[in-house]
Length: 329
Image 1 (cartoon, rainbow, N blue to C red):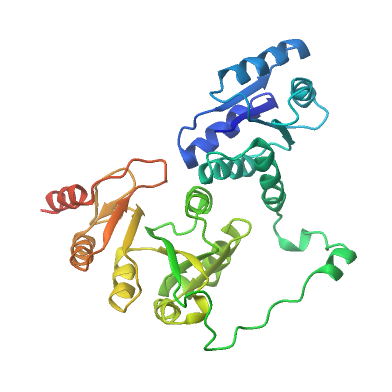
Image 2: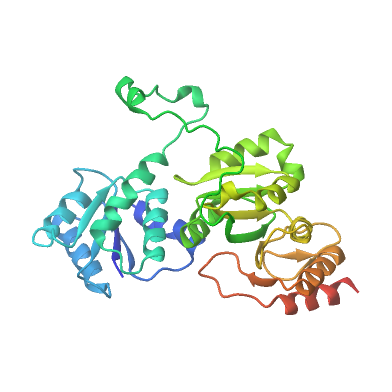
């Protein structure tokens, strides 16, 4: 596993590490090194060397540093000398950069530091945006001229792949598309489309817009009503698509499954608490309707993966249902 060292002036490195932990959970071989006001260059280099020494794999190391030309960069460069064939440095340390790096490592435990560095540059740059969008600089003329023309609609009846859409994850999450989904789950299951399936959200232009903006680089996000995903299930033009489906509640998932959407497993991420619901773990609350829905899904042969992020241990849904039933008596 490639070791990741974060190096920064002040507490940036430690803060980014802590923030990433909220998304992915604790990570091995991830070390933050902080330049304090009293540290000279030699002292900071000692900290970097100690960080390298703490890694389980010292052959593959990537340094994510805050500022080109600063002491963290200069001292990282100094110890890179002689290791250029295996080690790498990327500047501009940020939370999106670290999340991308951790996602790359989760997707391939054997990824090299050089490949990781190449793979995180594009998404890290694309993660910089501005609102309102009118403040975004106009694209360079040359780049605009080189942009390929948009593909036209695929003719009806065209069969792509084997003609059947692939669901790499179907998740119930009352928050729908948010940071943990857009980062940890996307990196884990690698969809090319994220599809929010909700009649209510499909009619809410504000929520639709926010969801589109929350999609990670390289993944398209869509918001569709329930009837649309039922149509997509039968459309051979989606045969080459790997989709992550997001449902606000288990009732919507049950409705489309009963209409033939070929979901075999549901990931239960979070179900918000409200009046009449029982909190059964830190992020899931159920009422009687939810309990009955889960029981019906079980009768249909659906299995369940109850966890917030990939790094979490899975909860037992039967135990959570029992807790809900006891609390609702």
